[in-house]
Amino acid sequence: MVRFAVVGLGMGRGRSHLIQKTEGAELKCVIDLNEELAKKNGEELNVEWTTNLDEALSRGDIDCVMVMTPSGTHAELGIRAAKAGKHVITTKPMDVTTEACDRLISACDEAGVILAVDYQSRYVENNYRVAEALKRGWLGKPILGEVRFKWFRSDEYFKHGNGWRGTWKMDGGGSLANQGAHLLDLISWFMGDYQSVYGETAIMNHDIETEDIGLAVVNFKSGAKGVIVGTTTFPESVYFSAEVHGTDGGILIDEVLSGKMRVIGNGLQERLDSIEDNVTSIIEDMVGAVENGSQVRIDGREGRRTVELLEKIYQSAKEGRTIQASES
Image (cartoon, rainbow, N blue to C red; front, side, top):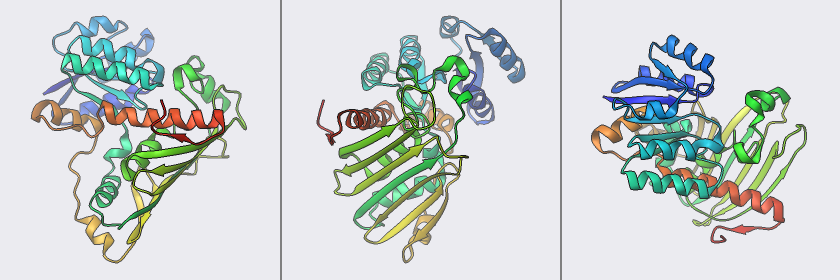
């Protein structure tokens, strides 16, 4: 049995319920600085609650801490958990800078604990099948990968929770860093390491520091191309999609978070159907890693890759030029 604590109950409430539903996992404690929120969730979940993270970290009956707080706090809280000997899961993105990611990776390495990043689209079975198909060469030579989302976010959304969303310090960016992080992770998973990137960003319809529309063109080391489009200015949230194709077939994932997709290619659907994914969530993944020594799907170094790509897109948008992956 792997025993969990969840920090941050705005976003962490749903994950707390998921822990309670997962075989081999047990929720022991929930933590939030807001006493009313901590108490409400603790009572609802029938577990202990506290506003004091150090108090929770000192307990001997907690194996893993799940950090579900604003993005710019993930490394700091994760490092504290690692130093207390706890395995660490952060919600996406891993943090807002690669420097912070590196500090968290080092802390977990030094403590000998597991570090994982929660990108829920990695645990959608059809997304896993697409990644495996590309890895096995079933689409032939990769040509193009595209990820796109058009969502609506109100001004109230950015003001909620002390206004941390849409700030560089706590959100690390805007539409690309927050909602778009899922898709940046996905395109990297599908297409592999990037060679260079050109990005543009703009603030079109919100009073925020960062961006509410972001665009990028990516050149991958494989020779394939990539396109990233993300905005929170659309009148309503209409799609969150990914497309990949190669010389022997193509796949259109119409809804990334559910896995609804269309497949083009002779016999490709049957081959995809033959791939099974037995891990359905980050919680199952961590339980397997702790109890059986399996590799988590998104470890710290994999999670860092998305933050690095984000940094390069924003650097390109600021400087108005293509940025190479090799640039520091």
